[in-house]
Length: 391
Image (cartoon, rainbow, N blue to C red):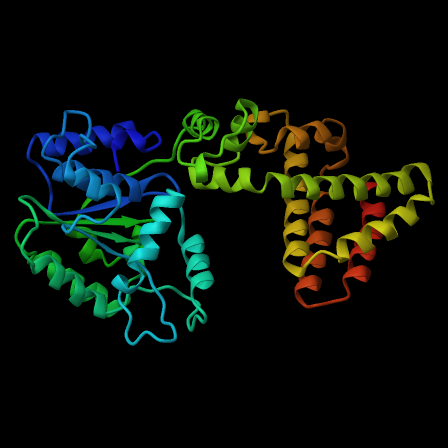
């Protein structure tokens, strides 16, 4: 992986390049920051930059045999440890049992989080016996074994540990001993979303590198150009700006928002419709709108339970965004163009008098859905409560 392939993070890239040029490469480094900002990608590019015999001041050459092996994440001196799970047919699994799948995840999705990794494991395996992904004790032995081998080429043997905070206690303590007495010419790159969960003794033995959130401009440009997206997917400049604004500095978050855009359009239409029905009944005494409410409730009840929960989450989010719209600070509002267009006229109806009541009603409906209540009754009752609150 080349530095130029990574979205933004120019200051971090420069610091990493300088450490190599100046011969100041700490044997254990911790890349920490929010999910979806490129930490794992930076670690891989850094390892490749160190290993490339033809590197320039700016990047790896990308053409030599070393770079080509790194491009497939298959260089003999590049090793990975990451959270895994137990499964049927695997006796005491280690990360190497899942390494082809992990490589595929990195190469195809570029940016991903623990939820996406877990979903891929669930999809590939017949049965998952644990709900939590862990780096088990036995992995510390694998780490030591791999790093004790002779290097394939001159230079560092690199161990990248993705989400080290998910090591169990025994594994963490054994890793600490390896960090205290590392094998010769080894480099540990720990990539963490939650460094506060690591042992303080591990933190004290690593040089910490904070990887910041991306700017909205960097995210928008990447989405528009298809950089870092799945299969090179691209969005219009206007869409990219909207998605980037809602991403809170995470390219992964922006990509998820973009991927859910079509779903959110459906949710927006349902939200608009029930609010218009409620207003028509409460303000215009248009009792024919009650028929529309019954039809709306029947339509929403046909969604799957997870979809109904997601829709109610969407409704609560729109209530909050419409309430904030009234303060006249658009930079604080996180909506798509279609949502903003609806909010121009609707936002005044969400105010101090009813905002908490609306959130309470949507939250109550969500709890009832999760308890497997009758969906048709839940959503029709919700619609009736909205009449009183929107009036």
